[in-house]
Length: 135
Image (tube, helix red, strand yellow):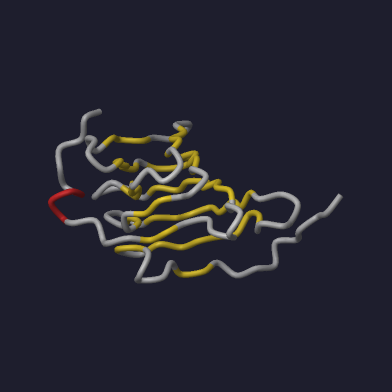
């Protein structure tokens, strides 16, 4: 058994991964033989990830607020507390807060055999972000 004490500072999300104010708390760093990592991500209204992929997929679980997510080629979807979203391996996607609401989610993803958990792409355009949601 390993107890990881909460002594790490909340980190500001890097500008080359996120648009807007985003803060990240580490839940679990990948530690062999496990390949899973988990973070709690706090998005201010209008904040969002860049487009990105995960080689082994990603699950997010919304704990607070109202968010948006989209897979490439699909509609923007509204997500709320208790919703979970699974993004398939290598599925290009983004997620973040609604324009007028904060959103917090737990993000869980595995590291692949090369040590990669995520590959970051371009920022989400205002046109994509402000598209009328499907739900």
